[in-house]
Length: 442
Ligand code: GLV
Ligand code: MN
Ligand code: MN
Image (cartoon, rainbow, N blue to C red):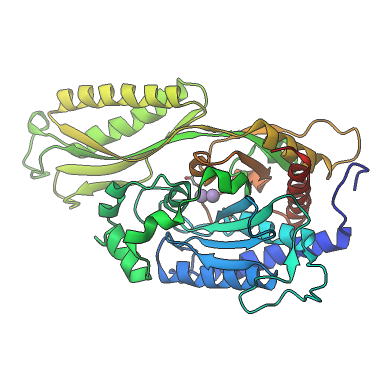
């Protein structure tokens, strides 16, 4: 601990906290719709199960808990009438996921509350009230809320950040008609989960209820691992757009149709996928991914008459990202013209780049410094190519993020990893950042 540290916690307590985070990540990994892999999507039975577990852990800390109108699991501790510093991340996953993306950040936030909470004077509290309320508080000029967001990934309905958009009050009623792979609409999924679509507005929070939003997350890229650094301050979160595209040609006999009569949708879509790579590489800090690609009718002896594919575009700045999309649309026109195809696209997600608030970057930097020997180099500052709930929260609150090294940058994959040692540093840094936020004005 450096002299500047505000956190009065034994190193042992932090090591124990980190071990608990690792063990709970393992426990949540077992809550999966798939037998041999991790799969936990929005409004599924697994979503309900992890919310119940998280709520139990939140109540153990003396926090008041509720599930909001969008299925986010929320907890609060501290002055009931004060605005809150929100800490959080998400518990939903991609398909065949790792066990730390989002999850580690939620569990680390719980450990921060464990380190910071104090008994309410004269309560004789043990913090185990029936609804978790009372008994404990935080010695800060604001309350702390933890939100386990329900849908950061967009795995089920294609539209990411549904949970955090509801909290940010930016829910769009057009989303109710989105359907999952089985044709279930978002509206029906809400009802089946036991949520009332008519009450979605109740999840929305007002800017004056929050003093900021802080999230810890694994980096999901290799920069920290390459630099040999455990933690970084995040400067901004990438701008993102997602599309579902369709290329239409004509399905015909694979043997009888000469090349000059073919209108092969798969070859056109393949050219488009290669163009994504070429156009992104020509821009600074833009990445594009075609992650879904399906040919119809999908028979070995039929020329593909239609291809449906996805496009995920990210960039540090909205303008560069949009330039790539415009160039790709022109490229698709040209490919279609050459090959006698038609194409169309539906945009399913769009989020502008979000810049982390300088004040919160400062407290995260201070938090990281508390984990380093005095007079160390400045902690690294990096921009996030991955999307996060903070992108939505930026509409109502200052956003700050702390990144943890994940070895080799492997993420959205079962081999995703983080070390208990880095989690311990991360917990200390996040707790210290919360305390530092408490020393700032406004
Ligand atoms: C979420 O992890 C995303 O960046 O897609
Ligand atoms: Mn993810
Ligand atoms: Mn994530």
